[in-house]
Length: 574
Ligand SMILES: Cc1cc2nc3c(=O)[nH]c(=O)nc-3n(C[C@H](O)[C@H](O)[C@H](O)COP(=O)(O)OP(=O)(O)OC[C@H]3O[C@@H](n4cnc5c(N)ncnc54)[C@H](O)[C@@H]3O)c2cc1C
Image (tube, rainbow, N blue to C red; front, side, top):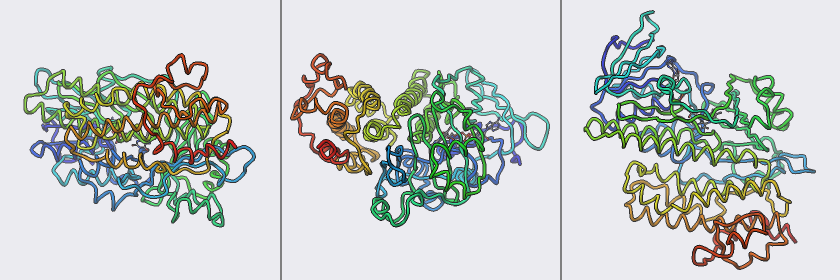
């Protein structure tokens, strides 16, 4: 059905594509610029199917903040979707063991104070279309977008599309045009701005009827295992079954369906092996037999696949009143679910730029700077996530990396969204200055985790870790994920975050040494180290300045004591 928008009609903002990115942007523009008219054009008409619709169901805290607070959807999310119990990883079956319960596990035991959600995409997009219409947006459905004619020197843009009620090409003119057409990337293709990443990561997914609960993979009599995450709550996590080069996701949906996906690095797991449903089921039977057995009891509802999914762009916004958001702009990597985070950054930037442009203040330099922010955030996430594929099979190294990534995410990336700090240049620059040493520390840590995975000797390990085992990390998260702080408080928090990261780097390094080079561990005892010089090659420690710290010594026991216990450092060595 096409709404009764006459061809040639004019609006302030036309959004090409009414998926997650386009619909959330429409709502944001309506809330932040109530005087502007908004139209959204999409190929698909309601009713949209529940459950088996699109991928992108799991959110983290900053995306939840965007949806709850920026878009005012808190009550809706609490009522229509599921609260998420964080990220959960089940590592490969240790040699000599046979039961699922023996797989090392990292995940939360209790819901955290700052919420996140598992979103049923069909239900969400269906409902959001209704909400934006109620607030006056024009939703043009069943319409195929064709091209955008860019207006020059302030002239309106013109979007051409084919409606479902006439073979004639129709058009809509608008002051602003936003491409939210997903992987169709209407504007990126037209303007030749898109770039593709080389590493070939591929994914397939499908939804099943009913709930596939990971708790059912372990007999109820194994109370110790079940009591680690009380009240059968594991199912609310974004559960991952991982091994070197791949992860399998299990996500519950509020429509009583379960989303399943396989994501893998091609060099290790050829796409051909799981590119259709039959092959994917067969692949799962070989790689994840216990899970595949449960899966066989459920009806499969759909199947989707995508090759080489990461892409970027040379430019995503312009002062010439166009912008791209969602998959039409950039896509990083689905591990850690950053898709909706990047949409939140892009949409907040676009809505802000629309306001600035209407007030006559938007310059090409500012649009370029906002564009660079989104692209570089996507690049940073892609790079730091994709190193994980090589180390996922090693619980020790990947466990350490998870602590690092979670802490870095809550310190450096996520706080930028709370209160939309990233749009306030003074605040953003002050926070950036306070975290300027992070980038090189992070590079160093990523190298450490890669080397650790190659050399692990099993001298440390774990059965279960709740990643809130380090109180200081949980407290840091609760302190950071709060909106509208004055700049002095943001800077003080960031300085404290950097101290915590420096201590975490030292604590994780010592655990890696205890695992890989226990015979050298005594050299580190009682010493405050230069975290920027850590390496798993003891011959280089002196030369790189490991024992010449950059900062005054501190007690790291708030981090090292709980982590050593979690990784059973002393226990496994004696
Ligand atoms: C394997 C995988 C797993 C993922 N998991 C997560 C996750 O857990 N969490 C997360 O946050 N993100 C995840 N993502 C990312 C997430 O899927 C995307 O970020 C999100 O779906 C992008 O939304 P979008 O609105 O840009 O695109 P879409 O949802 O694809 O919307 C684009 C819209 O444009 C319309 N359209 C396209 N072409 C035309 C045309 N010619 N005419 C008319 N309409 C058109 C389509 O109908 C569609 O509705 C995952 C991605 C992948 C590949």
